[in-house]
Length: 214
Ligand code: GRF
Image (cartoon, rainbow, N blue to C red; front, top):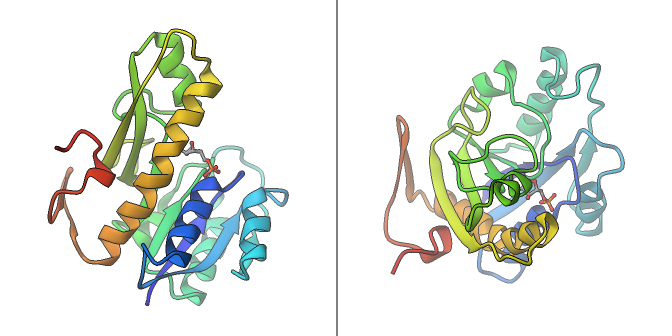
């Protein structure tokens, strides 16, 4: 079994999409070993409990956008305890710092609601909308030391229409996220993804991780 740990601060729809893909057989050989949250009220923890997956809350300490090294060490301890080989950030609202990077460099992935490198940071769907972009989307990437700067594994694009709102754009993006993220996890679990510097090479052509592929 390829064991993953999911870390999230919010509603957990991407976690749910991965869990659903496992239970309907499209993501076989993968097990969600643990879910961790920095938010005691995050719905992602409820979702995990409903599925019988260990759901762990780790109190975040004094910072808003990162964790102190001692607290990151608790994350690493928990991930190791559950023998996690891939860390999947799904709506995790903090920067990953050294302790976790040193333990899992090249083995942490994130999903971001824009076509990176456009619109890094918060509420990227709103940034794209406010900017007047006609195409928005989502990106799954490996984490590096920067914010939303890591090597890109896959992207899916959506149209932005004149009568959209930031929320309607986000909803459209999330539909694509729920296709993109399970597919990226599957390809990594199958050993089809190779990271080489800034580039990610995927063995084969998969429209699930790039909806412009013909
Ligand atoms: C997603 O839009 C993701 O791209 C961003 O945060 C949101 C998380 O949504 N990083 P959910 O908690 O998975 O529903």
